[in-house]
Image (cartoon, rainbow, N blue to C red; front, top):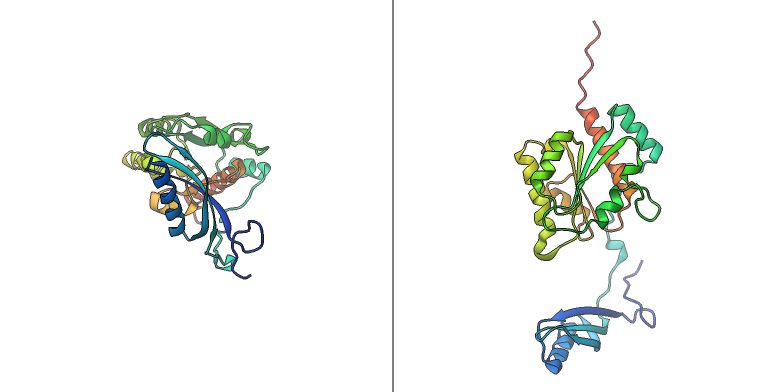
Length: 253
């Protein structure tokens, strides 16, 4: 496939729309600064289509222009799913046959994050867009701790409930709060000697799967994650871990 450009009015015209805010309030100087910034981004024939003062010292812009850049789709590497996609029947059967009890999941939005919409979409019975959440599965016991939970509270529930998995959801990203909050939970679990006993999952719209290793998580889920994706991964990861820790059968005498 040849390299491609954005499509606006005609093929390969490169037309794009971008929006941004600059820390400048003087109208004409702000407009010229926006055009200069667009040019530095590789936009030709840039035009400010909309600008609005955001207080005395900031201005918001919508700018149109033709990008000089292209992308070759053949150079893109797509991460393949490395766990099976399971039906609800398979999920319940795998948990029942392997664990011989319910799989216990603790979910929370930690730190200052009060946004539970993503967490609830994954955990609640109703799920999201017709895709059932973890509470739907009879062989899972879900403990939704809600928002602004401290790492210490997560640790307490994990210990008291002997949880198999922890799911931390983060939406707020100012000053990398989402990263800090995930690291705090990881550190608290490690300090309590519980990290190796649970499958640790993070999720939110600003995360990517590649961040799991650097954050010390077993899995990171980002945008467009369905509840069934999380259910499939949890079931696979927890049951695989359980099978790996099964005592070896004694040799026949």
